[in-house]
Length: 348
Image (cartoon, rainbow, N blue to C red; front, side):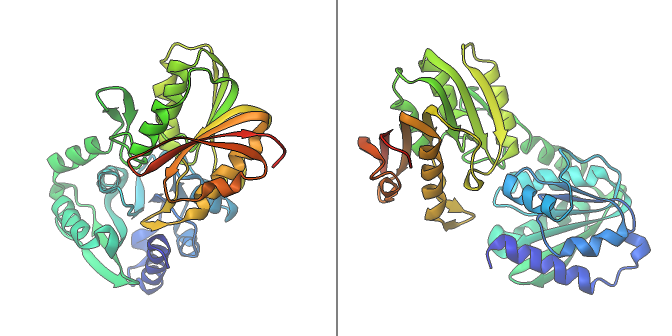
């Protein structure tokens, strides 16, 4: 099991063993970074369930199970569950928000894999709320605390709320926040690709896995011939940040923002160009098929003669997804990365 699967399993075991009186936790329920899983059935008898999840694949899984995803959480709630992520500032932000959204005496349940710093998170939760119980299973800890307003460390809560909020980064060039890929510094691959996108790019195009808009910003700043640009991103928070970052620019192109998982297909065809820095990690593990899928989807969306620009780690053989259907040129190799330009010459 990966860390997310372990957290789901650990929470399910805890809820099945929970000896707390049902009346104590009966009422509206909320989940930060909600994940699809059987544990949701254990919560249904308790009250309404508001699922907050900004990652599209997980949100789709929740919707498929009949649990709609909400854009924000508005309390009060009797119980709030927080799934930990690798972004510590985001997790602490969610803990701080949870203590405001819980009713007095409400229960906060935090699920954290050991590999995501569960022991440290337990100490921080105690620091915020005064006490917490811990249950261990599947290399995870399920941390449980009760809200008592008089015991909350208010200055710490304010600090955590601010640390996870949207802010200007990279010298004020972009708005970003914890929970997004490379949220406070442009990653080297995107920086290299952005620097080598030619000003001659024109027409209708897309930025796949757009993040908070680094590559799109470069295109809009440099390419006067753009007619339309669609950003597709699976992390909803990043997509909203991209909207803020790009809509303030002066440019002639029509912009569209789509919250979608590229690996499930994209609703675009006959494009003049696509740019992408395809992901190849899920959590802490390398998942090369992610990048290959991005390249296939990007090339499929191009018209004949359309151009794809992408960046990848030098050792990743993404060119194989294009060979036979396109002309491939390595624009530059530097710092362990390669920038590739490919022209579509026949249908993929």
